[in-house]
Image 1 (cartoon, helix red, strand yellow):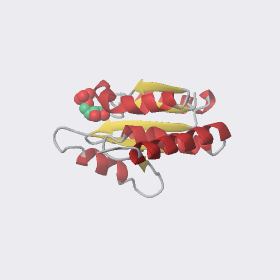
Image 2 (image 1 turned 90 degrees about the horizontal axis):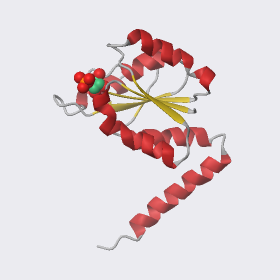
Image 3 (image 1 turned 90 degrees about the vertical axis):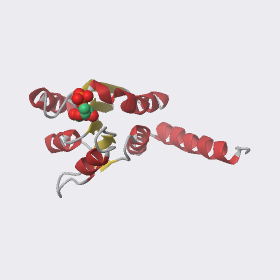
Length: 155
Ligand code: RP5
């Protein structure tokens, strides 16, 4: 596996599934887990510690509310962490966004938009493509297809 996708709750799956679908589209081997920073702190730390020996290069973490999951994961590893703020009921995801984006200096989390799961996968693909020419070509083709789709739109 190259990417670990971690979410704080099974209730995050609807938001996180486009991330996994996009990784699959690009043929990226990944593993997904539900692990909460506050409900499962011990197992989360064990899982994060196990990732480098499995070949994992990037961690994507999605959480909502007081969304400390990506930041806690980033504190436990030097692997790059991409955070997805999951839209919350109470504050429409502003709590999740600010919790994830405002990491104190020294422990970065690359923060996506609220519910920005597809972009998290595409960002991971960009990083992996730095050392993978075939993947870089796939990403260029994706961008071209996306551009053509807009240019060919008739209204
Ligand atoms: C966070 O709290 C999860 O990431 C989820 O977005 C939110 C609500 O979790 P549940 O109460 O649905 O398990 O930890």
